[in-house]
Image (cartoon, rainbow, N blue to C red; front, side, top):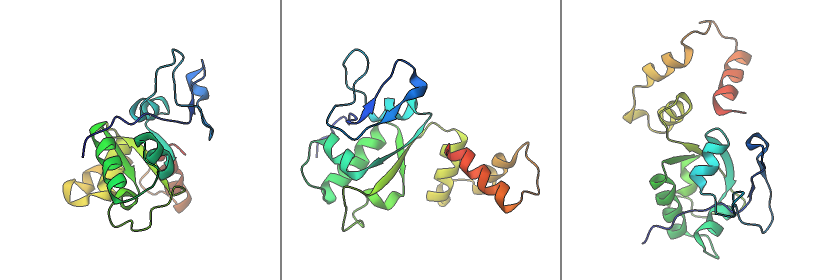
Length: 159
């Protein structure tokens, strides 16, 4: 199975990079100079986290139908571009009924706090979970209310 470079198909890049907008139309993701924008570029342009669908990933790979091999190739392509995703099962062979509308969050595996927390949750055996969680609380009040904890999670995820 050969690696294909994933290029986005629904991002409109405005002169003001803070005004990035997801559009669901037929225009390819292109920069101002007309060159395609990769998922990694899209991820970094949106602050390291964005939402997409399996249908968008499938289109980027050039397939007409979703299946286990398409999911595996999408996972490989994202990994090679330094990106992670969640929920992780969406690109797994365990997803025995992939659908184009299933959503996926793509994030930069840049070692930042967001990446560390997502990886600690997804792969706790490969990480020092207490250290990551303690790093999360550094400089924050120790007694957070449930609402404050939810606000903190939203802040980390950029929501």
